[in-house]
Image 1 (cartoon, one colour):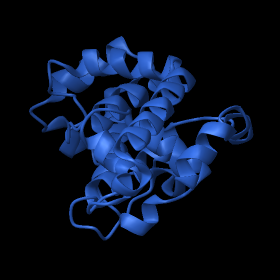
Image 2: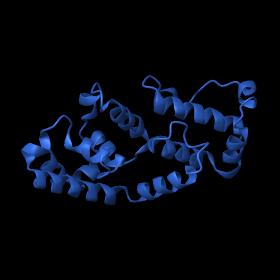
Image 3: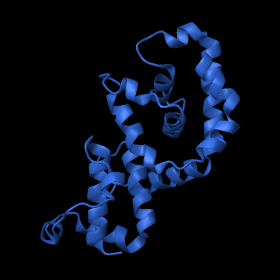
Length: 194
């Protein structure tokens, strides 16, 4: 892959994950970039290395993995870049298993705290559990895809960044909604009823 194309992919994904207005699915990943500007960058080595070592699909996945892990530069300049990518691939392979485990954790926490105390507090339990590292981001995204709820909290000062991340990550988490909804119907119903 041409390093300049990697650079344009990087710009598109960076805009997607760091700004509210740019949506990569609507713009089809098209970003204007000048080759002259690209050639003046001090990080050309890192971009060329990505172009040499990875396919287009892998570069997209690597950048997404690093943006969702909290790296605002997409991991290009980070030594943990490849580790984040490996973790991302593992999580993606175990998507439904992780969802099942996370739903069990949510139900256990609701039972332990009682439905009323789980709803008390300033923020919903699912966000508190994600911030505490008890459930995965993918669980939030899947639940948002099936039962949209993030829009209600996007103006909350504390949750606005998490809501934006969930919204921006949605196009990259692929599930069969009907299958997931049917497979986890009982657990979803318990979570929603309480």
